[in-house]
Image (tube, rainbow, N blue to C red):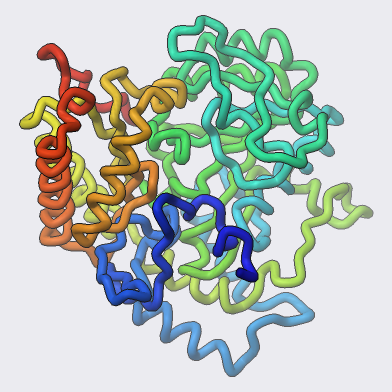
Length: 440
């Protein structure tokens, strides 16, 4: 086999084997064996308009004869920049690169250049791409009842330099007291704190308002750059999820949906912070590079995708997501399962644990066998999710697709109960799980 493990993307690996996609259209994917599934995965939230949306395909087809990459800037760069700055209140300037990973990397570089400091802080379970200094802190977390809330992270992959671990301060998510403690101890050393307003790969867990308020207050007091990672959450409110919380970060990182299904990333923010990217004679110190950064194909597709994702479309998508979550919770309650659903609007996740999930430590208590069996059970019933149980909706979805998801989940549960998994699946006493995490 020419590709290690048979695939390039580690997050898509799962037992017993991976299904390769042959084609996709709208809400459906079809694998090499001809199995058709409703795609509730959405390439980790990137495909907010599903696959091959006609308007996006049409715009890209019109652009292709005009070129796919230029030596000089494409005019579409200014168009998408205006569009994003018009949507996101905290964003006065923006520049483009090729992925959320790149956006985060250059945002951290800008924060270091601006402050003259080197250390950064991030939150347990937070995923901010795969550059060195953020590939820590998703594994080896303290136990859920451990009172320690500010720690040194563990590496999430091999090959990291020691500084990538020791220059990062790891803070418990949704813990305002932990934020204050971390800033009191490390504030003078920190260039930046990066946060997701909803923890993504850490469990699709919304931030609690007091947590974000404390974070903004403490970073301002300490002169630390606050970076809001909206790579997956821009879809949830017209101005990003930060607008729903009333949060105004110094920098915001973007990706996924702003490329309309094509590779893209962006970092934007206040003009005084973004001046780090100006020419040297104008006070700039940080280069944003990349052969295909701001290419006209991704920019063209992104403009159409954002045009389609107006406030009404977002509201409709979030309402559909709330109905899906309500249906899944109904199954959990009917069968008295030791499970719960977290999330907001069009993104949510099923957790096989009865510990209230408000941070990554709680998400880590989920039963790994039931997680995998649920994923496979849904796949065998025509539903594609992520292996960890995350679901993302797309605008072509309708009530019938939601009903199919809920029915497939219930049928999977019944099959698992029939096969003898009841002892691990069911609550041992009648008690509520506290519903959902607090939201904005």
